[in-house]
Length: 481
RNA sequence: GGCCCUGUCGUCUAGUGGCCUAGGACGGUGCCCUCUCACGGCAUAAACCCGGGUUCGAAUCCCGGCAGGGUCACCA
Image 1: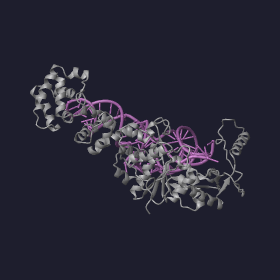
Image 2: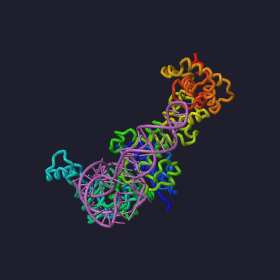
Image 3: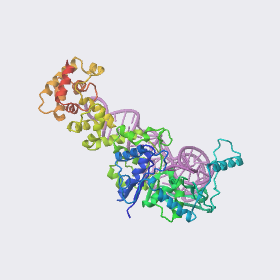
Image 4: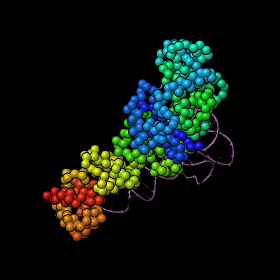
């Protein structure tokens, strides 16, 4: 049987890094085994769910290249893929649970609950701000064993069996995890407005969508238990679970949307990170395959397994993300990088740039000199301009009388060059140096300063080829004046 | 607080009782290469949370501490 996995975000904000990695692991497993990857939208939190968030999540996944076989825009016969579109289904299952004695309607009011809390606090001698949970507060609804049926709104609670002992599951990452039955209250299945809560909607959907493996963050370990009870009550086969360690920020707190801008996937696009650079980095954060660090997309698919997922939390390391990105910048085909780079170059002041031979050459020149596409675009921009402003200190150092004399000699050679390529240009530096008893650097630096305005650039040949013959000679003339 | 998960260089990690004198990567430092900057190459500093136990032998197994994290909503 081919596995079916899913990613089930709630559209309450942008695509979070942790969510992206969860999606990635599910996607990798599905792709590796020729299975199906489903995207389901858990939009039952109507207070916070927005259309923009949904779009942001879709955009984020698309940018990363994590495609779904079923979900929004792709019907696969297991829909609807939005929870708010299957309220009737949840209601029917809830009724079934009630009929079988596994759930009950709870007509308790907010006031009654508050009164119960207050009574508990009084009994324990707690003060105003004390945490009731720490003191062991549990709410037992008076409706648990009532047969009475009223009209009007009611929430539906699961009737947790009063059992001795423990129950649990075999996690694909963590191994056996168990808890005592009496650790659980009668948790809520459905709100009084008929909208299911996470644990209930999740189980119904995973079953309806024939999900075989659920990989999710470790924050969901504890919600697995109530879910297991629902599976038992309904006589359904639960999927296999794989709980993935959380990602922390450098301040050692959980990577959060509020405090940590790097938690936003699309922020990295803005910063000039390649989708694959981010994929490679987040894959290695919490998963490993021996000593391997760099993986192509295909290698990730073939090598991924839940057994390689770690057990402990990982800390976000921006330096390593940059290093990983740089690796792919200089490893991927220049044409591919050029296509990714184009929008950044256009945004940085070269609106009419196109993916052409010059841009590809620019990638070859700057891929190993840049950590991001943003940086590469900035470095490339002067090569698209007419003329250049020469840095004062650089001019003082390299364009004195001697420097200018050597520059003039070099220009004579350059003018006579039949073909304007790095291979043809490079030897000229040495020829001029030898002919004038100068060091190679004494010739190269004045050319570099004249051509780029500063002392740092790729090799002279590459630099001048990228600039073009006319622009190079124009800048040299300007420097000579 | 109850329950649950986790604990190897600063960080990500390899490691499943002898191959560990604990390996790789990022970052740091030094050197080499070199027309500058990079790239690349070489070298180097840097870790098994603590305490018991099991064993001929423990980073690996067990117990106890300690530390970090998760969860305990009509959020997901």
